[in-house]
Structure formats: structure tokens, C-alpha cells
Length: 467
Image (tube, rainbow, N blue to C red; front, side, top):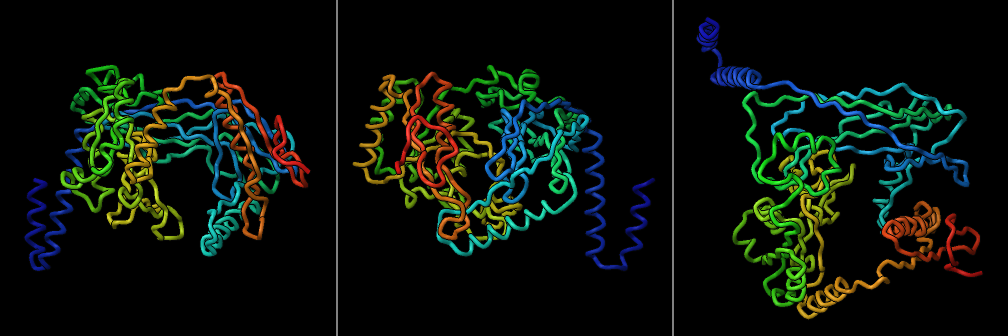
């Protein structure tokens, strides 16, 4: 009876334009299809409880505070309060359609005292570009206006940061910020726990288990991984690859002989090595240009071959980096990256305009399916020498490899030469390396700038400079 009513209405509208009739039927088919899909969908939930870690409030020389929390990074939007934050990946069923994500915070705890949280620093390219400097300063000052508002920032302690895939594992990304800050009142509130509820639908028809999937070895990065693996993945342990460590080398045909020392070495270590020329890729795969053809090759083969590592051999004239437009207020395609060859499930040109990595318009998911490196030379003799050196280095198991001499100099002082850069002490990076070496039982000797008017705030074993 309902269909007959639609027919009557259609016959009365025939005095209108043919275009109106087409629009009506398109809307009807869309509505009818949505009813079919809704009837074949099953609503489900994943609930996760996330916890903050121990923290310290560290005061700098200018009186501002930074909150240091184990296992958490920071919000780093220039000019905004630099609060602890962490992005969690929550695995979803392979056929899940996300409906909503609810963030339920635990009771807030006000921290005694008054604090001025330092803003995230101005980020500037190490170039002499006047336009980029002005653009970065403008963004920084605009964001700094938050410090004039009598309100807590951010206005929520968690949010959905997008969806993505890690190899063949689908996930959602959720950001957790366990502090909120009122810059006018200089007050902090702490939220130690939040609950995440992901509402989604799956097909009522049982999803066929993915046979022999290529899944990540470091599954600990993804919440719910172990609970879902048995239901949706079969054929092998979910953390196993077809051949652990499959290794692909991509290079011009002229360099096939030059890479032989490295190929032989990796095979001796147990890797399954495939050397693929760009000439073969160009003939076998379609794409806008060579980078897209290489990426399409990797998308096609990383599951079938179980690829874990990709080594690009050749300079950027032979194997171009993907030029991207990641800046918020600029469409300049002047930011090169090889990460384009690593993130194989994100959409680097979501709007289809031929421009890649555009801020707010494209959707790379920033999770690498393969680990990518590059030997950036195309001269055969040089490449062979590099490969031979790599083999000698990897084959040397001397204890010296765990002994580090870490030297950190001042890259620049604040607003040095009027360029607007924040103070950059190389010792900060060396301290990270120090922790890494100590964690593997290594020994470290540090040398930082201990002399001068504005010396390093980090302690070191020896001074890098003298009066």
C-alpha cells in the first residue's frame, strides 16, 4: 500500500521537471537501502576504563609549570597550555561502523595551590622563510588568547581523534587529557580516570574470520586486541606474520648489484628479502606518479608477502618523497615525507584533488603498516660502500655499542637573531637517549653546556664548553 502511495505521488508530479522525478527516486532508493542496512545491523558496545599515571609538577626558571606524567606526552598546539595527553588505540571488529564515542570522566580533583602552566612553544622551521615565520607567529598569538579566558581548558578531557587501521586491525583513536587548567585563576583540576564507551554496529550475518591475517607484532599498543583476536582472526597466532621480518628493498635497476652485500646479510639473519626495481613497479602498477605506484605496490603486497620492512635505495630524484600540504593556513606543497610509504591504510588524498596530506582535508591515520628507511644515494659505488658498512656495523656485537657519549649543545637561545625561535637545548634530546641506553644496560657519558651566561639546566658528567 505504501508503494502505491509513492506511485500516485509520482504520477501527479509528472507535470514538473524530469529532474525532480530523478531526485525523488534517488531519495527513495537511499531511504529504502538504509532500511535494509539498518535491518541487517546489530548494535554493540566496547567499554574501556583508562587511567592516568603518577605525575610531577616541575617549575621552570620563569615560574611556569610543566606537568610530567609517566607514559603520557603533551598537548603541543603552539600557544595553548602544554598539558599531559595520551592517544589510546581501541581495536574494533573488522566490520564495525562507529556510531558514537562517549567519554565519561571520574570526579575531578582540584590541585592545591596556584599554577601557571607553560604554553606549548612556538614551532618554527629552521629556514629563513619570512612568510612561514609570520604564519607560525600568528597561529601562536591566536592560541595564546586562551590565557585571557576565565575558563578551564580543554573543555573536555577526552575525545575521538579518528579511525584507522594498523595492518589489518581496525581501531579508533581516543585522546585522554587528565588535567584541565584555568589560566586566569591559575587553578588545576585532575581527572585520574575516564570511561570510554564506543557504540557501533556490526552485521547480523556472522563476520567470516579473516584467515591468515597480517597483524601487528606489538599488539600491546592496541586495547582489546587479545579479546577480539580469537573471534575475528584465524589461521595463525594473531601476532605472527607469514614470515617474520619480511624485508623489501626498492631501488632503480642500476643498483641491483650494489645492494648485494646487504641482501646476503639479511638473508643470513633469516629475513626473506625481495629486491624490487622501480622500473618493474612503474610497469605493473597504476598511479598518479611514481610515489603513488610504489605505495599501491606496497598496499597490494604487504599482506600477501607479510612485509614488515621497506628499504628505499635512491635519492629523491629517482624515488621521490611525497610532497604534502600539512600546514593549517597554507596550501603550499613543500613538505616532503617518506611516511607516505609507511601508512598504507590512511587516505592521503581523501578529497581527491591531487594534493596530499592537506590539513583538515585528508585522512592519513599516522600508524605505519611497514617500517620504512632510505639510503638516499643513487651512485652505485657509494651505495655498495654504505651496504658494506651496514653489514660490518650490524655484525659487530662488541660492548661498545651500549656505551654512549652524548653531547648536547645549545641549538639556539630564545628569539636569537630576532627569529622568534624558542630556546632549544640539545641536552633535552640527549637525556631521552640516556634513558634508552640505560634501559638496555648501557653506560653513558654526558657533555652539556655548563659554562656561559645562560648554561644548560641539565646536569652532565663533563662540560661541553669552557669560559
